[in-house]
Length: 87
View 1: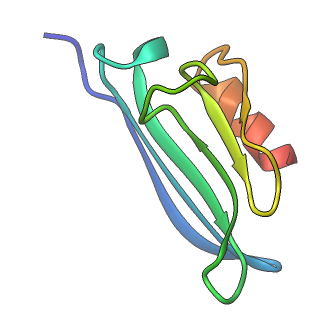
View 2 (view 1 turned 180 degrees about the vertical axis):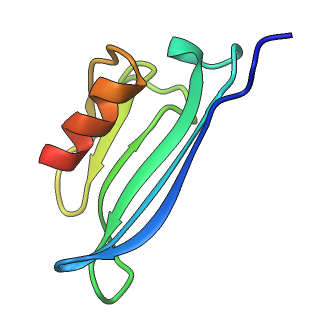
């Protein structure tokens, strides 16, 4: 049995709050089930990354409040977390 790796974070940041969750899961693309969310102070989601559903965008998604959802590349969980932090 493969070891389970987990990332879990819920933290206030300047201008809002960040929630990040990721767990290894071979049933999901890239071997991880994840959702990363950045919320405004009123709890409105501003930015989300996830791979929780299939749609026309592909397996990995970026959802932007008042913007267009887009497919994003997944090059491993560490790079994905770093990309989310830069957005």
